[in-house]
Image (cartoon, rainbow, N blue to C red; front, side, top):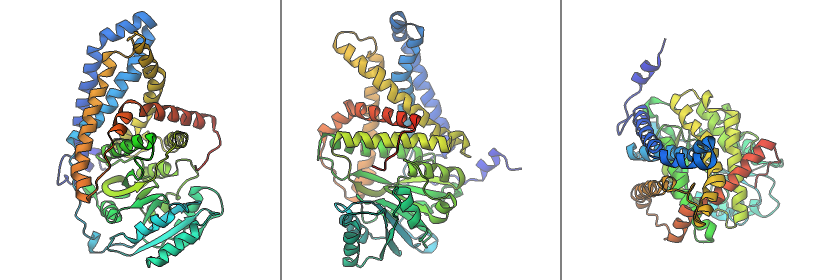
Length: 452
């Protein structure tokens, strides 16, 4: 019988850095020490809260706005410190570049579809590429503009029409027609950079420690960062938050979302998983199914695209509510304890802490700031403010790494956006957490779902 120890022994040591299990043990010890120290030194704060609000709140408040956030941020920061990025050589897997089909899920995207197709035509992928428009019954000029653009650039292109409303319907109908071993999804308002698909395919075909990779998420940055105040903040969320979290998760071969906006999959794995499910977070549920039944989920930071983000707060809030609801759908469909790998169980379980962060921020942190302004520093004490410098250090590490290893290598020059950074650091979470709480509530009551 094969034991866990023998399986560990059979896996090759990575050519660079620590084994994921070794990294996790070190990070776990460092995080436990950090949180344990925080709990110990903040005992006077808890005593003050207990005298004012009672023994229960003396633990609920610190847990919500200091200890749980400290655990998440500490785990994140120590993982980043102990993880070395190993860029893969852009050489064909098994000596030959596999054919790739790119699926564009679209519904009334005439404002962006021409540029999306143009970017796909400019890809420098050395193997055959076919582009398929998964048209979810668009009523504008999306289909005509996509076809004309593809013809103008000599792109191998076709359209698959799906009249039933729903992104998953469009993707699954198109998937049924795919004949290539690899399928890449891209949103109709996401613009691929020339080598992005090449980086995706190389990472997907890699076998870390001889394990199969079922999907690989690409990296997204904001296309319209200076359009409004909310896009300025989103630009930093994508750069440091979303991409940073994916990098942390991928350190344990468990990136939790191969996002539909730009990711690569083995076609047979997606079909075996039943395609994209009927869910508001169809890409989240598919990712968790693939991770549970088919293999590892990776992330490639140099597989870069730009994507258009909401320019109005109302639209942004709606989007983030859908994302939060999608996370709960993933947790329901494939609970972390169902994952076969121990590291996948643990990384996926971090999602259970996210609602605690959102709840604590909205119901304790924000009221604590208001009370602090009026001279009552009980909640917003220096114990909770210690998270700010730690977060700034983490963001500094992430930004420096990204500048050196991604932007410089791809010759990308993001716009200067200092106002957006301070807004992201000090105020963005208020919008995001309120939107997420709404998404959790929508999931709980089973409210109607909308693609947009």
